[in-house]
Length: 279
Image 1 (cartoon, rainbow, N blue to C red):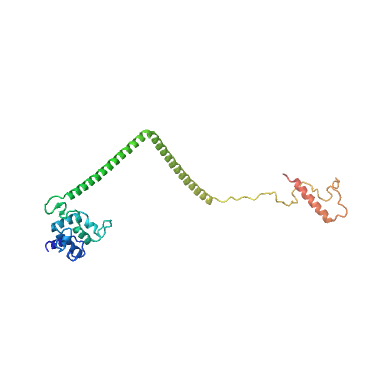
Image 2: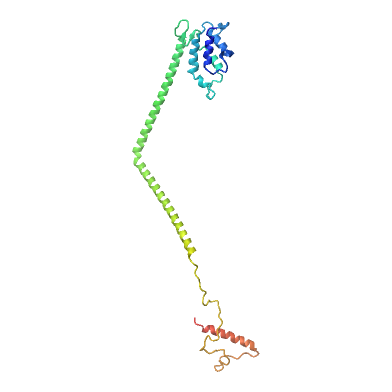
């Protein structure tokens, strides 16, 4: 029929249908209803005033291209308004009539070419709503600018009132940082010097020979035997009959044996030698 092939071609040019538009029953019914080719079209929204292919082109331009149909129907799109079934979306775009007047198309009556009052009222509402949104956005921008200006003023006032204290705090912090840096450098240098001294002492200890300590000539615990000629000029007080003339050596008690008498004389001689030894 007249206009169907032209509308099918427009739908196929969109490149989003899985088959030809003429073979999809949903689109075929929508195209025939839009053009008024159904026998029972009087019960539909376009019964009295059927449209033409140029009206379909206008709807596709506004409802598909300007509404982001190519992006919203793509495979990689993940938004909430994604078009999952392009055929059903296009069919609804052709058969949905927003105005209460069936002869109104895009705000103009098809029979008289006059502007639709209902659509004008709705357009005025949309314009007023858009202006309100724009005014609110401008107010928010102005409020943000005022807040930013006030923040800068407060910062300038704070710096003017506490500038000296802030500078002093900054200088103290810098001085503390320098002291910490010097202390860290001194500690590092001390550790390095200690390591070097330790290496030097280790090398000296390895190279130095161990001293030979001579044995003591006469330790206190040693008891050297008394030599017979230790005192050549002295008379032996324990020689036989040495004290006979002096009468200072008592006679041995009766019954004493020769062996016990010899031991007593040896102990007396040893004691006498120790007493005569120079201190």
